[in-house]
Picture 1 (cartoon, rainbow, N blue to C red):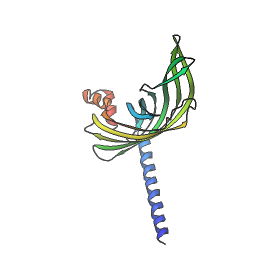
Picture 2 (cartoon, rainbow, N blue to C red; picture 1 turned 120 degrees about the vertical axis):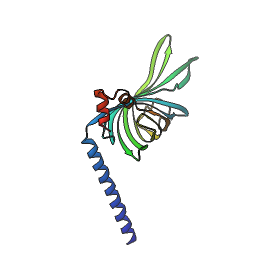
Picture 3 (cartoon, helix red, strand yellow; picture 1 turned 135 degrees about the vertical axis):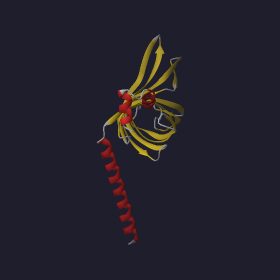
Length: 217
């Protein structure tokens, strides 16, 4: 009997939470969307190498609750693979690039604190690139599909700037079997938040763009 009661309570809480999330999501989508963009870097590992990934995302935010968009991501760190062939030393640079599509749920905790939960999936390629006899050669290029769920905690000092910490995981749904590195990795970053659109609205409050930015507050 106790087990049945516990199961009933668990299912009731789960269904209530799901309904609240769907209601919040529907209310956000019904509002007019606002343009958003951001640059980001996140630390990770490729094999035993530190791998910094640089990204640029653009999207549409609905009611500061839900964002959809896309971006480009590329390996910013330099990782070399050295091989010896017929007495020659070939030093190949690893390339890792993909276009991503993401959805992000935003949970505002207070005036200063909020949690962002972005989930993205991408498509791109990884390869080796080296120079031989003054010619640039690309080798072992294959399609890759990474999947990245993340959680980010933000603290905003005001509407113009703040701090953030982020943790996530990169799971390769489709990997490049010709490259002998493990691309699956935890991702993490800590940094400063800057809101350029809000800064613009603060500097030029009477412009049409500033009014549209503030209208989404």
